[in-house]
Length: 157
Ligand code: SF4
Image (cartoon, rainbow, N blue to C red; front, side, top):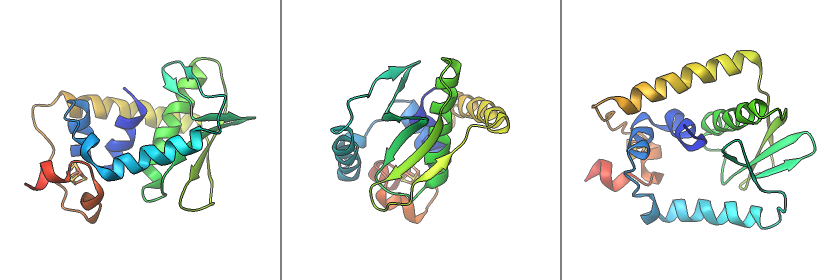
């Protein structure tokens, strides 16, 4: 399990499934390249970046675990990805508050890992495991956001 799968589960079940099964067409997507560029640009200023309990930390700033995102187009997916990281840190004895920082605006979002959210995360992880262990690829969702997805060609050709 990882943060990307959590993010994709909220963004699109099919995307989550495809990513889990290593159908990684993403390297061909300019948008993904752009996202990685922005990520790198932010990270260049970060000297504290490290792996903790299997989580690649963008940045720790005082009491905050910072996660950088290119845009706030899918805040819920980003929020649960960050909750997953907070949860993994907590398991390593590190308690932090999350903060999402978006490249395309300055409206940071604070994310708190409550006991309720932890229980919800456990249920989400079970759902993701069921999803990716299935023989059935989830259907194409036919949404506007598909146009920006790295799997667009795979899904619509
Ligand atoms: S193109 Fe659309 S249906 Fe296909 S994986 Fe991406 S978001 Fe999901």
